[in-house]
Image 1 (cartoon, rainbow, N blue to C red):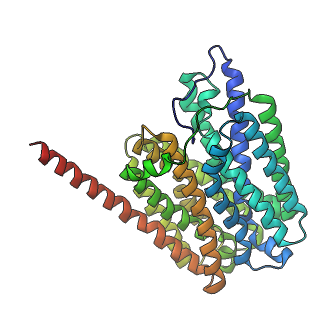
Image 2: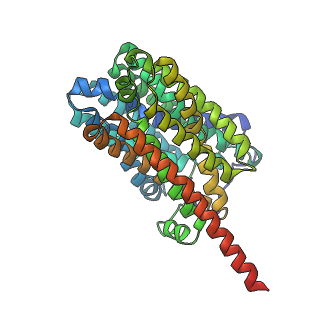
Amino acid sequence: MTTTGTPVPAAPGRSPVRGWLAVLAVTLGIFSLMTSELLPVGLLTPVGTALDVSEGTAGLMVTVPGLVAAVSAPLVTVATGHLDRRAVLAVLIGLVGAANLVSAFATGFALVLAARFLIGVSVGGFWSIAGGIALRLVPEKHVPRATAVVFGGVETASVLGVPTGTVLGDLSGWRTAFAAVGVLGLVSLACVLLLMPKVPARETIAFADLPRVWKGNAGVRTGVAVTFLVITGHFLAYTFVRPVLQDDGVDGGVIGALLLVFGVAGVCGNFVAGALIGRRLRQTVLGISVVLTTALVLVALIDTGAFTAGALLVLWGLGYGAVPVTFQTWFLEAAPDATEAASSLYVSTFNLSIALGALLGGFTVDGVGTAGVLWLGAGLTASALFVVGGARRTAAAAAAAAAAATK
């Protein structure tokens, strides 16, 4: 995702089957990484209770890796630019497996946070490298589909990995959930080592590329602003969805199942967005903002039982499930000549927003109450409407001025 220069395609004659097996190994790695980053969302209450910290403090388990991933995305890519990419990915995914196992056996919250720091390093580095690696693995005609599959690991983790981990935590304890994701990371490590070919290092992104694409591209700046608002607003509320629902009277034993409903709706939202963004990208972004804002406001206003909560989580999941593919496409279309640099800004913004959303949500929960995260989150997601609308008006005015100047 963050490599620049002229990409080098897969070697001629390379077996498409072996290439696709390598793509699936990378996808499993990204799924493991993103599930690791977001796993605490469904387990804040039991982890906080077991380690004697508040739910707001427990939210640091999401904040810390998000902040670290935002910084490590460009740093790891540049620092490892001379190394074989398979080796780098293997080290990073192995680190995630070990860190989750440490969390599973941790006796204090400080050790958990140290492990979450390492997960942040791995998430940022792995995602930034893996996003652009499909071109090196499969024949050119398969690259778009393979890239979509790799990004599918991010989306699937967001909408299914967390709910599944929550159900496992409810059934067997939060430590079991962390241990399971740790084992998944080690399985991913084995798949990367066994299924990926060596991928020699090529020219990598330079730090100077990031400010250049930021300063020179209004579409990228709009994408960063919209990503920040929507993802921060979503995670401000979603990080604390368990205490939100419990405070509203939903039995804790069914929350894992409700999050699975959220996940299934998210997968549907991904497919709906995929069908729309080719022709109506801007309208899809606006629709995501409207759906997420509506869902958060309704959860805040309506007294939810299990059935009502499930219905509202379907709406919420549809909105969020459409986010990754839609926003990634926005960045690619905004900077077609600098897609890798623009994508690295997207990765950093996405992870920074996860962190800030969880951090602000923690302060809000501890200071105001769980309902506060819903209203604040809705305010942020709604603000994206004005950013997109303002950008469109600015672009229209610039186009009109340019047309007038040519007359």
